[in-house]
Image (tube, rainbow, N blue to C red):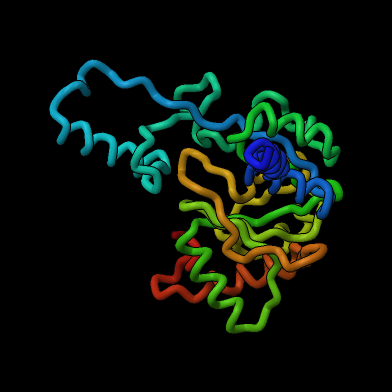
Length: 252
């Protein structure tokens, strides 16, 4: 009887433990009221006949594939590509496919159904409207910019980091407002990207073709504080000026 009760207890506790991505998606939807949807995700690539050589050659190719696909932190997994039909997808795994972006929701029942059926799907935030927006830039430039902004005492909100780009979350803004802000600037670094209404952003702890997504600056407890896009944009433009070659510090 004790063994049976112990087994039931383990099974019950096991059912209560939500996978990390489902837990993250539910937290975004229910605690922060951010509309989310599952990304297309990744799939294993088929090994070609030419790869059936020596074990050393296989290990070398696997290592190279891992570095390009974000699999370097999992030696037991081979190269993976985007699960969408496009063999040349430029954002592997990190974009909507089925369902489309308009399906993003804060409904916990829908969120739970999605990630119960696709537990490895990346978590995508549908930006704009009442949801956060973001300004992103290359990872190296972002790390440099954040150090400058910290020294100047600027209070930032959450920062999402991938191996290639970092995204600074900001308060919702309209495309018209963004256009006005950019129009009055003499120069804006071309490396900046804006994730506003009709856009999306991959959130931690997702995994994409470029690697794992993490919080460089995690959200504060409770409702995450989001700075105004004008404040962040002004600070980034100012931080980008004064490079020794007369260019932008945020190019790389």
